[in-house]
Length: 426
Image 1: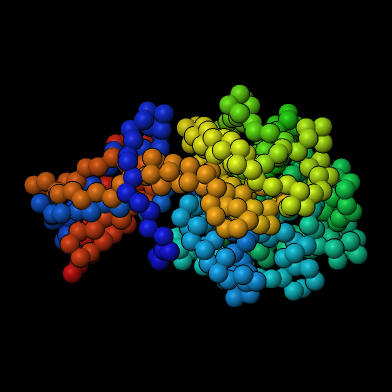
Image 2 (image 1 turned 180 degrees about the vertical axis):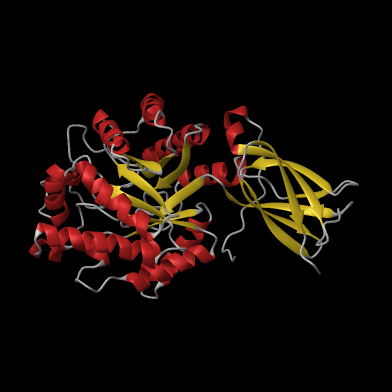
């Protein structure tokens, strides 16, 4: 595994708020014969969190594929991206992934996914089924033919990327899917005939058939009881939802503690791990609260600037939001929806990097949390007479180095956990 960024040594905290994210590791060192290795100097280094701190990787696709319009800017953005996140969401919107039937952009996405994987980054595909950014050529097909092609598309993408991308937003925004009227599209036509439950069944069954080991999400922006009813209908119909995806685009004002805690209480009762899949927190003026569809807010980037006051508010809210979610045991992932202000959805000043490429205070604040306060510092220890080493740290992937050899160790369970590490034969 290569890396463009080496995180700094942090200040491990035993804050009980995050006890479920921490472990007390007892490691027994042994040689390849199984004999203990006493009095050995051991260096412990955290590689990444078990919790998935994510961001979309859309902006780096052209750079990875050698067609960047601004290579210097994008190279710096790649460094900033890797300096903060460990999980990338890549776009599989049918309309842009396969704008012409039979010509999907598989190779460009595969190269991008492989680049992220080479940096040790986990990957998710978004989405397999959605009524927006749908393939325009699908409108020429009958509903039955469109459904057949939809099923084939799901199987193709999940199969083609199996082993590289094994986590997917199986279906996106089903609550409004059958009644979506903003643009004519074949998926809404199918959903109007099949209904919400059967649309979910198509997405989950076809993806599961293509990759039985995939992690599949139901994802939605609607935090009303309509989403709860949808989840319950899916579960009653025997559809297995691996993870619940909750969107938190805060274009009309931040959620705050009360709403966040209320949402967590309502959706954690299903005992399905929660991913906050799409988070945006602005550093500029919010969208007017009376606007029901954010897509109706049409302004230029110049008309919607990031401000000094807004950036400080954003930094405070980013820290608070991440801290609340990291503290909740039901949440296992949080994806920020765009690192730079360039190319942000709706031209919003919602990125953590300004349009000129400089980091906002929120970037530094979040890096301090993820790579310092919630990061186990690199530590050198010595095994005892029985070859035992003990250390405390955050759940995640670690590298243990003994002399000139090293091995990786995965810490997944809170509390005290025992592991045996066999050093490679020299």
